[in-house]
Length: 307
Ligand SMILES: [Zn+2]
Image (cartoon, helix red, strand yellow):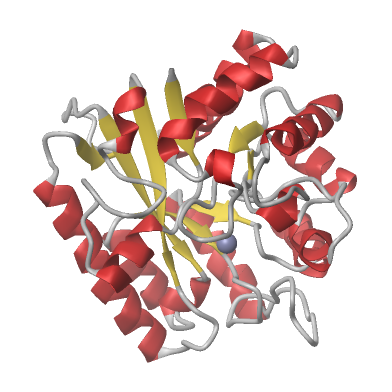
């Protein structure tokens, strides 16, 4: 099978622990990807809400250097998604989780672009220079700079990601965005807990993303799925089924959040994805639809964005 994952924090965690992408103690390693025919992974550099301005930009560069070191050490098996010449079995897309990495300037955004960033999750949980996140205490939506920032992202063909945005920021963006945007790692708001209520998408938000031609990655975090620590397969099915029932056949993807959150035991490794795929077949989701969810929808979106 082919797998395209819209979000993981593996690079940030490997950098912290000093481990390697090829073989490590985390959810994702290149050795674990051996179960796929083709594997495409968005690697996010996570910017904590404690970092702003220049310190955020310096931290980004440090982790970004580490990312390119890891790609270079494993260049026979993985290469940047946009390197179409390289026939490596695995492809990597660089992302930033938290637009604070741009240090509140358009020049900072140009720097991220020059370093190969193809997707920016605009906020983490708090406010930054661009917009309010889902746990913002004031929730002001977008700043005037934030609107300028998104317009420039669209011009540069960097994917705009709403996961972690507050509801107010989401609908603010919907008013002025000119290109489709995505939710890289969010579930459906069918679960009742404090995190799911803020981080998952309402039906109206899901329908909006479907309508504009965006994509949504279902997240494996236990609190977003609403499952226990042991098993999450049934809950993944429920979230996918719900998004499909709203018309999301060409919208739903996977955004595992591997190495960035607490996942159930039956989904705690990249090489358990084929078991999830088989389970979803057994629950009656058609193979063509699953192939779209696990790979083709994300592939189509990025090919169009980067064309
Ligand atoms: Zn996240």
